[in-house]
Image (cartoon, rainbow, N blue to C red; front, side, top):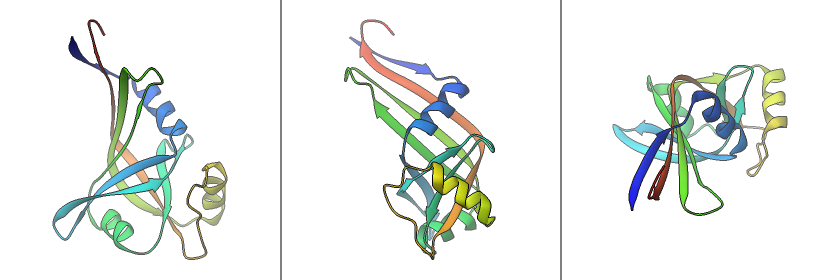
Length: 138
């Protein structure tokens, strides 16, 4: 038995970002890394990840540091393999009301957005993905 890592092409990374509703954003808070779950959407038009949040730690940390990391992952239905997609980029606030309405409409809202919600976009500088399996062949 051996563990196999296979790179996922960028097109498949984008598809997996679009098909997944929960991801994690990694930010720096008071000089230390922290990770927060977010209910996101993948915006094909801008090729970026977007999510709503409130005006607290996550938003301030994302906008106050030059880089953030975002990850989604999953296990295949057979349970014998999994995958992970990571985006590293710059976070920016989305303020255009029409754009926010469109993003909110395409996001499966597991966590509701309210009147004080602010939206963040992660503009990818790097997008990578890997498939992992433990078997006798990849």
